[in-house]
Length: 183
Image 1: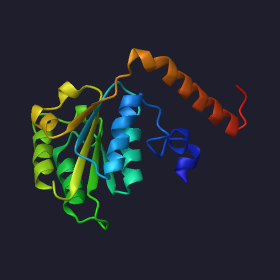
Image 2 (image 1 turned 60 degrees about the vertical axis):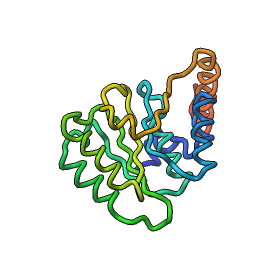
Image 3 (image 1 turned 90 degrees about the vertical axis):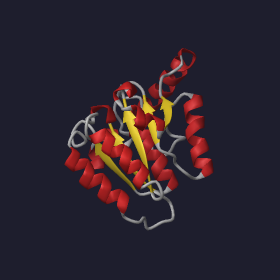
Image 4 (image 1 turned 180 degrees about the vertical axis):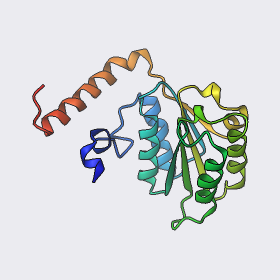
């Protein structure tokens, strides 16, 4: 019900095809869909570039159970991560597909205690759970997390900026028209 009123959620892309991304980035995620599996991932790039949206769309398209922890809110506390992520990751999925823990804004997660615990969780639950980290500054994540994840850089190549801006503008226009708002 709430999602009907918050446009950012109502119009959030639900599939990788709906996401406005550089072609090479979109191709990477389409390969994951084609293979039918998600590796542990580190999605890095500037704020507001669709890292979280892509993570959620990928999980939705593959039909996997996912749990989101916001690193800037809950992720700084070892007990929160230990209880929430570990409880979710340790249970068996109703489908054959692995579960996914999305750690949004992971660059806010404490490097001295929480990140090492996450490294251990990745190893401990590798049979039935994957981890997707989103961050603006990948250098704020410890090297052992980097080494356990495929890194996808969301930087927009200069050659695609105009095309992506046009696609975004067209999407905004269609939303305004759908809602009968003059612009």
